[in-house]
Structure formats: structure tokens, C-alpha cells
Image 1 (cartoon, rainbow over the protein chains, first blue to last red):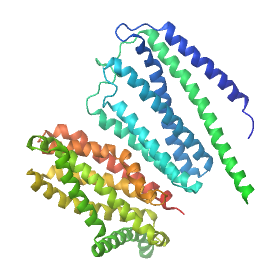
Image 2 (image 1 turned 135 degrees about the vertical axis):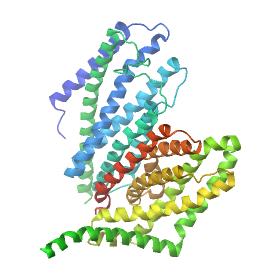
Image 3 (image 1 turned 60 degrees about the vertical axis):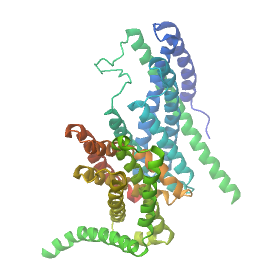
Length: 229
Length: 235
């Protein structure tokens, strides 16, 4: 395995610095919410982390289609990487959101479309990992994995729509226009977009690392096989 | 000219013939053994009995819970049938035989799907009157029957595809519900809501969005399953 390319090394350092920067920005330069106190500041990270989960979700569905078309196993490695990152980040989003909701809505959990869809998405990803575990042939594992990710990519939006038809209390951040919309000051909006940008960078860095790890794992498997032969 | 037309028409008529013969094969086998339907049926009736004790379905609770109880029953019985119908193919090498046949592979999918749907419909046709009698609630509502059909189509469409996948894994029987339930949440939500809408006599405007979701889900997932089934049975 080749050493990390310079671009990746730069991304590593940049991600660390920018996450720290975003953290300081959130702590020092955002307005203090009177009623909710410091808990409100979770919001900036919650949105960013959920955004990364979303990126991973979209990436995995797109890559699954690419795999089914090209049949090149490298896309399977990338698909798995996207799914794993999305799994972890949606989990973080749910945990952060729960802490926020405890203060804002007085409950850890509500059956809101976004919360429920995120939870179901986690279930789909766990099922995906279990499916992979049950298959030994790498080529078949890749095919089934891609088919399942694709089905998940189609069913999750429908799940969201169907739960949305129930009434929702989750704040609609942008373009909602109704009374649900959060009243955000400019510095709040700015910080939110900064932290989304920073976490997108973190996503790219992690994604790259995870893909490299996947290829490395394949290499190890090949080496093992050639040694035992 | 006439001959070329004839050869052009042949593939499609072959296709439907293949679908029909696979469905027919399943039904004939089931008619002889009656394994699958009897297991699904006894299981569903047990679930309905258990619901009575678990939820204390008194007259008041019945109206609001009936749709949910029915769909949980159908979903569970459905996985039993789906698992079994694919496991038979796999265990006796039947699937390999089918794959060797010179027909488009999606014909196998549609054949299996239609027979699975048929078995599920039989179970539903017995469960609904049974439930009506046991809980003294009238379920013979044409809207409810339509929703039951549409929901079953979506559920079986995805289920047949996933069953074909899960039988090829090491953890086969356990895996199917785990794969299937999170993907069929939209069907279950929409079917439960629409069914209870019809049972409570809600206005059509309240039922319509759920009805639309069911139609959209059915169309999308039948189309996608048709496209990806090749990848699932490929050797």
C-alpha cells in the first residue's frame, strides 16, 4: 500500500484545525439562547453531522448503481465505506438530537419524520452489514450489497414522506416559512453553514481513509491466500 | 413478412408463458403438499389470538387497533411464506434448473411473485372473515380489500426479491425479516393508515395520500425488482 498522498495528509491536518475552529466559533461567537442555555449550541453540530450522514447515504446509493453497471469490485469497497460513515454519523445525529430535544421538547424521542427515518435508515444499514456477513463469495457479496443499498435508497425517501404526513414538530430550518421555522440570527446561520462546510471536509477525509482501509484489507486477504496456497 | 412478425411476437408470448408456468408449478406443488399455506394460516390465526390477550382488544380498542393488528399478522405470515417458497427452490436444486431454462430471468421473478401473492391472498381471505367473527367487526369493506391487495403487492414484490437473496446466505431464515421490514415500512404505514381510514369511515381526502403512497411504492418496487433480479440470481 502506498503511503498517504499529500492531498490526504493536508486534509487530515485541515480537518482537525477546522473542527477545532468550528468548535470555538460555536462556543464563543454564537448568541446564547435564553431559555435553552448551552444545550442549544448542540444544534450546529447536530445539523452538520446529519448532513454528513445524508452525504454518505446519497454516495452509497449512487455508488451501488455504479457497481451494478461496471461490476468492478473497487466500487463495492467504496459503497461499504459510504454506508459505514453514514451509519456512524446518523447515529451521532440521533444522539445529539436527543440531547437537544430533551431540552427543547422535554423528551428524548418523538416519532417525528426525521427522527424515525434516521432510525429506520440505521436499521437498513445494520441489515446491510448482516447481509454482507452472511456471504463469503466477494463478488456475490458485492452484488447483493449493491442491490440492497439501491432498494434502501429508494425506500427511505418514501418512508420519510409517509411519516411526514403525520404531523411533525421537528423545526424546518430553511425555506419552511411557517411558524415552525426557527428564527435564526445571521451569526447563527453563518455558524451553521460553517460547521456544515467543515463537516463536509471531515466526511471527505474519513471517506478517503475508509476507502484506503478497504483496499488495504483486500490486499491483506489476497496476500493471505497466496501464502496459504 | 408474416414469418418475421411471428418471430417478433414470440419472445413476449414466451415470456408470459414462462411466468404462467412458474406460477402454475408453485401452485400445483402447494396444492399437493399444502405445507406453506397451512403453516402461514395456523401462524396467522395464532397471532390474532395472541393479540387478543396481549392488547386486551375490548370493543373500544378494536376499532383503532384492528388495522394494525391485521397488518402485523400479514407481514409476519408473509415472511414465513416467502422464506419457504424460496428455500424449496434452493434446497432441491430447482432454482438452478429454472436458471438453465431459456427464458428471461425476470420471468422467474414474476412467476414467483405472483404465486407468493396468491398464497398471501388465500391466507388473507381466511384471516379476514376469521377476524370479523372473532372480534365481531365487519371487515367486508371494498376499500379495505383494495388496500389489502395493494399493500400485499408491494410487500411481496420486495419480499420475493429479498428472499431470493437471503436464501443464498449463511443465515438465511433469520435474515429475511431483518432485510425486509425496514424496506417495507412505507407499505406498512400507508396500508395501516388507509385500512383504518376505511374502517373508521374517514373521508376519501384523508385516505387518498396513503392510497397514493401504496400505488407509488408498488410501481417503483416492481420496476426496480424487475431490473435487478438478474443480479440476484446470477452465478
